Length: 385
Image (cartoon, rainbow, N blue to C red):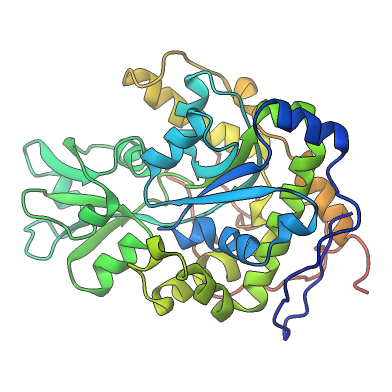
């Protein structure tokens, strides 16, 4: 069993290598036969809500403690991290749902074992001197707007979700888009770039992704690993959750670890800490559970929009998307920790009256600034030790 419990007032120490690997010899032999040992993990250096836990997992050598030989590679943007996975340079990675379904359409087998970056905000920002001060004014511009964002990202799908907006996308990387450059009427930014632009007065936010769309990213592996080496995926799920709990136990330490990566040094430690508090500390840790029915019903909209735009070669249905989720791993992780598997995404209020897949959605707890209590009644399947 891979389970490291961390006291909230303690600084986690580097774990010692185990006497016996938690990945079976048969699984290791299979991975070696594919050239996947050491396993290679790709992650974002530019989006703390996606990756702060991965940086801690790497720093604290959590996978090595389970007997896994591993190499990590960080990336600054979506296209290279996607291409690394598609080309086989990495076998484990994460990115937004919009590019994930593109990956699957390319015929690359992949299985989602957890979520990350749930609720990472995306917003529409106009230049500080723009005549358009709200979304209705932008809709009523009477011409085709030029809106900058990263093609193939979930910010692109956010734009597609806004009704009545006449625009053409100007392809920009987030580090360029966050400067709200001249020549665009608006930019669609995700955090931390959205917070960066607002904090420095580079533009004015006139719309948020919610209520149009529930943004998320997926943690996933090659499907062949799920099939032939599921014990490795279980170790990944356990380590992923342990790293998240270490981030929550000491956000300052996690922020300091995150900015050790030279690719992350565009952000100050305070910038990263703010993102960690908002996206990793505020929601319950069980927000990462991959509810297949919920996310498939939401993401069928993503797939349909991509297919209609000629970006995907084939249509899919909800049942088809559901097959790409493997909640079995976090189910086992939570069982080992004595946590209850939530019956629905934990950011949804119990009285939420929306229908998934039919926006605009009514109010939700998505993006709440105050930390949700955890554990509270119902969160634990067994009493705390």
